Structures are given as C-alpha cells and as structure tokens.
Image 1 (spheres, rainbow, N blue to C red):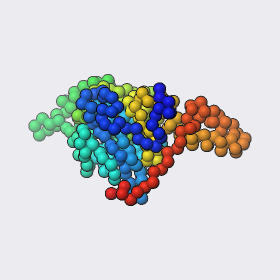
Image 2 (image 1 turned 180 degrees about the vertical axis):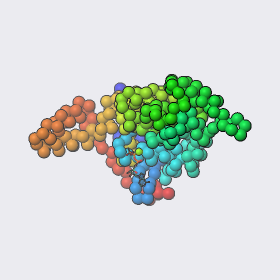
Image 3 (image 1 turned 90 degrees about the vertical axis):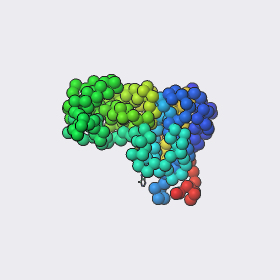
Image 4 (image 1 turned 30 degrees about the vertical axis):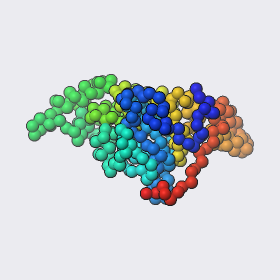
Length: 320
Ligand SMILES: Nc1ncnc2c1ncn2[C@@H]1O[C@H](COP(=O)(O)OP(=O)(O)OP(=O)(O)O)[C@@H](O)[C@H]1O
Ligand SMILES: [Mg+2]
C-alpha cells in the first residue's frame, strides 16, 4: 500500500509521462493506450465542466472514473464517445490525436458506449435489439434464424444463458439488459467499452452480475472505462482509478498505489466530512452524537488530512 506521502500531491494528475512509464501493460502488449486524454478540459460557455484531465485505458484494462454528482463524469465520457470535443488538451486514440465529430466516428474507431438509459426498444425481442441497425441479410430479407442463433451464442460466450432470445428485452432485469448491451458491443468489434454508471440503479446481486461482465470484457482484451460513484464497485474490477471532484482530478492511481479504504475516503472527501462532523457537534443534541460518530469514522479511515481540491484559476486561453 502506498502512504499518502508516496502518492503525488492532490489536485495534480498522476498519469504516467509516457506510455511505458507506468510499467508493462496487460493486453495489447504494444504499450500504446487505446484511448488517452492529456490535460483535457471542457467548457460549456462560462461553466468549466472539466479541467486538466489526464487519463488512459489500454487493452485488457479497466479504468474507473469516480466522482459525485456534477463531478464531470458524463462530460468526460461524452468527450471519449465523440459526442463533444474537448475545449482544451489532446484526445488520442491508438497514440494518434483525434477530433471526432460524432459518436459514429468514435464507433468506427472501435469506441462503444453503453449509456445508463440503454437505447433499447422494450417490446422488441432480445435478438432484435441485439442486431438493431446491424441486421444480417439473406438476399433482400433479414435472416432471422441466423440472428437468433448468433445472439444466443454471443450471450452464452459471455456466460449469459437466456431461456429464450425471443422474449421482449423489456422483460429482462436492468442488470441483464446491461449485460446484453455489453455483449452486443463486444460482438460488433468494440475495442473500448465505455459504461456510464451501469450499476447505479441495480441491487447488490445484479451489480455483481454486471461487474462480472466487465471482467469478462477485460479478459477478452477490451479496454473498459467504467463510470461509477461507488468505490466498492470500482475497486474489485479496476486497474486504474481517476477521481473527479467539481471537474478537476483529485487523483489518478494505479491499483497498487491505493487501497479500497483510501479510495473510499477520497470519494467521501475526508476534509469536508471532518468539517461536517465539527458543525454537527457544535449544533448539540442528537446532531452532536451523529457528528461525533462521523468524526470517529473519518479518523479511522485516516482521510481527514486530504485537502479538498482547489479550483484552478480559469484562463481565457482555455476556451476554444
Ligand atoms: N450542456 C451543458 N451546459 C452547461 N453546463 C453543463 C452541461 N453539461 C454539464 N454541465 C455542467 O458540468 C458539470 C459536470 O456535469 P456532468 O454531467 O459531467 O457531471 P456528472 O459527474 O456526470 O454528474 P452526475 O453524477 O450527476 O451524472 C455540472 O456542473 C453540470 O451542471
Ligand atoms: Mg452523469
């Protein structure tokens, strides 16, 4: 485990200077990241949604992006998915700078995104949703038996054993639907899979199932960007962790550099929690008791000395 002293100072980025600086990579073996952001930022008019973000994902790796509401997670994936262009910084795919004008262009580079609200047609059978927009043709007609068989086989290859691929996708659980979307992206040749909070609306068991498929995708050599606000979901599957707070990075770690407790502490915002515990204690009565418990927990986790991230001054040159 690394102590807080070992880790670079908060509020800065800890990305390797070069693709090889962080040691050997699993997966594609070339050492080139599939996707990399270098000092990327995004402004919406006067709003700085993202600032100075450096991160990468390589084949056979899972990079987790953690942050609270409004931290900039969706903005980050919109950049990677080709929906938005960064206002500053560089976006590289396979080591080459890119500038995507649409998600279609990103998809053509093998970057697939599974959004939380999954664009599925609930009343259509599973196999139909699986091939939506990519139907197999036999002459002028679509080849239904071939698609059913292929869908079933592909789902089985990911360990998803559906009784009947003819059932409407709306009858599947949220977790199963996420899994179908993941295997669909894998089937259609995604190299990078972006998952926007796939476990946010799921219970413990279903979340576990989705986490299992994230690992499956990684084992099949994909690079996965997994967005979540839950460190307990991120830690078991992640190889790298980018923590966002109000649009800035408060840490970028390889798994060997951080423990689950430290990750949880950083997510919780130790300094802010400590301040809250003091305020509650000052309020007296029942609030004081809660404050005392909270203070003890912060002390136990050893996260109180983590400073809240300082907002870097905005410069006009950031805007584009
Ligand atoms: N199109 C937009 N125009 C203006 N501001 C925006 C726009 N999109 C996002 N923002 C702002 O950028 C910041 C980051 O938003 P973002 O949606 O990326 O956060 P998030 O981490 O995905 O949050 P959540 O967990 O709530 O989904 C927020 O303050 C948000 O209000
Ligand atoms: Mg979001």
